Image 1 (tube, helix red, strand yellow):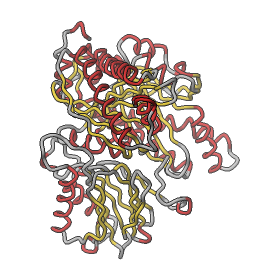
Image 2: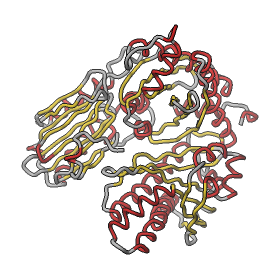
Image 3: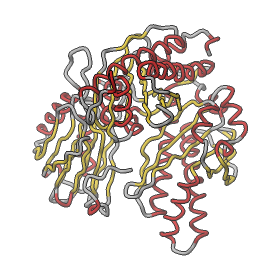
Image 4: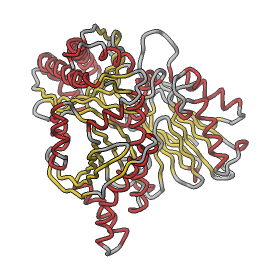
Length: 392
Length: 170
């Protein structure tokens, strides 16, 4: 079975439209402007689901689907954010608490309905929906057992839409998981190039993990700081949404051009405090500088070089290809504007991007570093397709 | 949290955020904001007579050189789409004035080609000149990122950089 990348892009767009619809309804219900920052779809394992959902209370709705797309689909968001939404609804609706409560669960219906309508239109087939079941649970228990089993076995597709209220301190994610088998079936009905073989999807996960672990080892060797790879996953996202995924905070970054199979870009971002920490750890005799200056620049460039070599060595192991990297481009600026030229470069050839996204925790979580690899999608698909089946 | 270029006094004004490869047109005093401008270029068009304004956040200069056809991704097709939407909202294309912000060269890519930022600026100047739209405010080029907020009520555009520097173009 081969998965059609264009088709995956189409589903990402449909998911994004569903989220836009939900945001508009929510804006009307609460009277505050809520926008969708980004919608992406990632292939995740049970481990990543556990990291994503751990330690949080969730509310959600689960619906059974039949017709063009069958199986169980779940939509979930954090309980604490549901509470904020509920209080906004209460403010709006006065004393009618039941209206506010139904408003929160109604959000689930609107959003999931938006997705399903879009999918039915796209497929040209009706999709029937069972009445939604309202759920509340801790961590991954919000997810159906079958989802966790599929995640452990082959990985599952997780749609995440990040919504933000413009004039309120509210920023939350809505997660949606269609049933794996059905979804893969749909992505492979009439594949057109570029495609990725479904049985190579696990190799994808290997790409995310190996690269990040190698890069983390290099940080440990260069700085003596303990490192831990917290999350690494592959997101499939509209290219123009990539800058929004990194936010507008100021970062110390290094950008590398990759050449070989696949070519692409590697972006490493440190928050300011973490950049200072690693730079001080690398300077002889505990030298330090005020703020982010030339010493930090030199240290981060050197570290970035070594991390990138480690990262692409990890990839070479999975893909069996050779990849080279350019000298580091150093930038100290808004994270989103650091990503801007990278997406523009890729945007000349593609509309969507696979973003291999890893977070390395430093020194017992006191700091962190984010690595974003953006390979050329056609070259990545070609390289994965060429892997022997045992690698899948 | 949303970028706040103006401080608490203006938080009550309605604001619309414009994503990359997207445009928004308004016919009231809603502030238009966009952030993370690196090599991308923001083009604001405003018809003061009818109070219609629009913001485009374009990624690349020319649609014909690329493989996809999202008009708002490109300066040339995006500006045309922006003008059409402003007209549909009651604006007059002959009364428009323009602001350009962004088009930095953030990275040195190998190959020695002109930067995407510089090509975006050229494309915008070319199309605005062909439509006889005057450019009234410019903050382009350099090697840094920018975020902006356009306030139709006073026809002013604020530009903020990562180091906290803020300037107003009006």
